[in-house]
Length: 551
Image (cartoon, rainbow, N blue to C red; front, side):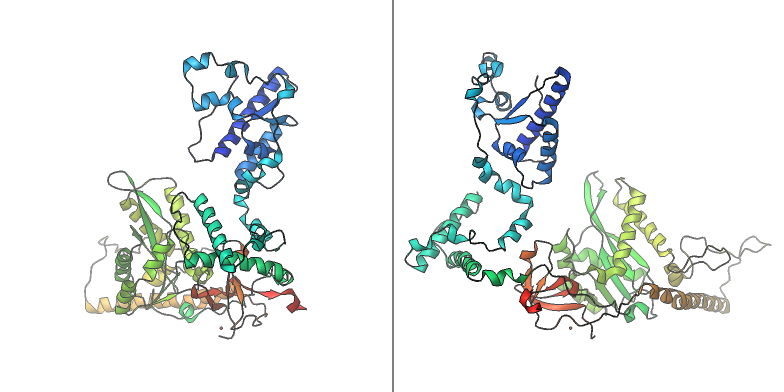
């Protein structure tokens, strides 16, 4: 009885495919054991890496670990043995064989010649495959490897690979080391191979591992005393809301801008194309304006900005992310927001552009929250629908009206209370999604249209009084409600100072973090790294100190 399976569409390594084959064999054997009541089963595999995975106690990648656990559960105490590739009957079909040879093939019909004689069964040594599986196993454990390299054990270092006593001069040692490093690079890279004479940079790179090895052996105690598990600097209490958030001003005078992730729409030919939603939000009224743009280019954004400023208002101040926190299209957004042509176009209109600190998206919380609401609403409306660009624009405009009708003050359950304040009240004097009020005369059934100057002036004053009434509610209800979320602890000690050497938080392993060295309370700092000056919030900076300095 045999069983096979087509390789998955997802690209897998050959050892992973061999592991899937072992899993299929284990499932088949489990079925036969239950049906035929066979007590003992011996499993054979020609993959030494798979056999190593089945017997190792080291941590494995999730893909491998899940399948190894299932195999061990199915096979129980059954023995897995090694079968040489040339004696594996399964390879006849996986590699292909002609029909004439297949009919008379004894390996397929009876198996290997040594199968019936246990004395001749091939043996497999566990230690022989350990070096072959090191890279495969430790691919997902880079952080653990890097942490172990900090221990600076005498068994580690380049001095255990190259014997320094065999070379009479330091220059010769560096040239040998550079050639060894070039050989390793060429073995790993099929393209961009290094040839020719050694350059000065190659010799400099060869000197670095020797310096590290010397530091690890000569300053072992000092390196081990470096504290790399400390906590970051504590952020002080949240500051008072800036003036741009609480100062009464025309809507969209201070505007935050952000982009959603990529959206896919159907174009005229029926194929798939990308688009994005550009969100403009007022920092004062919390109103939003949404624009669908085809890409993240400067021209597309400027067109969206012109439509926004023509329909709403020309802002005095624009605030945005600095684009380094985006994982998708980060380079395009960075080029967009820092484009010279964009800055010049906005400056000519009298608009100033500011950026929040890098790696601190909470500084732009007043637009990030609305980005989340936009995505949630869009997902609930569209679901998995594949719409056109025109349909998406219509839906996004409707979402804009819904978001501008959301309450920003307390919503009472008593119908006699005033309806909650919304951004649309501050923009238009009424809610957008509710029907306007008509003064219907009983005699004619229709309101008479009057264009007298006094009537128009009176109506304009009434409209202004309504808007002023809503702004008064904005001051008394909305602003006072913001105090509920402002909590203080009283612990505002100044913990970071100019000249401090710190570690800069990054998404990678901690050992790869960069080194870098201030209103009275410091919440963000300008730091200097090997890549130049940049900004970071203090909660992303870790003090670098030794254990002895704390005593």
